[in-house]
Image (tube, rainbow, N blue to C red; front, side, top):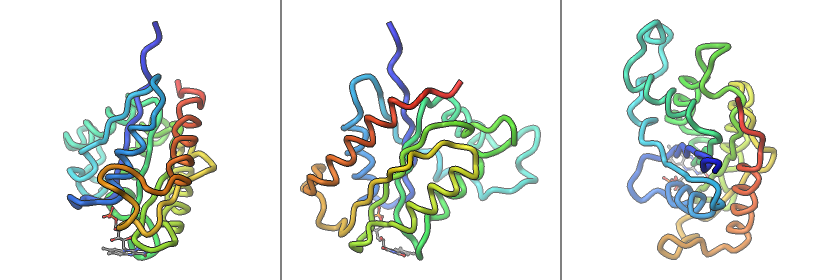
Length: 183
Ligand SMILES: Cc1cc2nc3c(=O)[nH]c(=O)nc-3n(C[C@H](O)[C@H](O)[C@H](O)COP(=O)(O)O)c2cc1C
């Protein structure tokens, strides 16, 4: 029997009532039965990227995070928009996972990018920047991203009230796990 695909979710908002966290939960719930999703708690624990720390014995949180990314078959990156781009917690996590060059945990990982913002623009700049940054870092971001605008009114409890976004999310999760799995 083949094992379920392991999808790791990185959320760029740390606040308790985060709309992006809810969007991440909705994405995990929409994964096909052939996959399991885990929301990583590690991005918040990483130090700021520092090449001096990135030596033979990097900090434990960095090692744990790199191991978690390396063990994933695919990733979901869920980004709010802070001042027109992705927040530092996500960029920092991507930077750590992009090294060492040639053996990076992120290399060739399929990634779906989602984003929620309070404005109707649905974190479009943050999603575009996250895609670009992930591609430069060596991952394989899907062409399509999913944006959720006006996020403060987009959920009824855990349920997405915008059926169009829910459909796009479901399609994106399907596509993510049907990508070729990195070696
Ligand atoms: C520092 C900061 C900068 C922000 N910049 C933007 C922005 O450029 N565009 C935008 O649509 N929303 C912006 N917002 C509002 C966020 O979209 C909103 O707070 C959102 O709910 C954050 O996601 P969360 O609910 O997952 O925490 C900003 C919020 C903060 C705290």
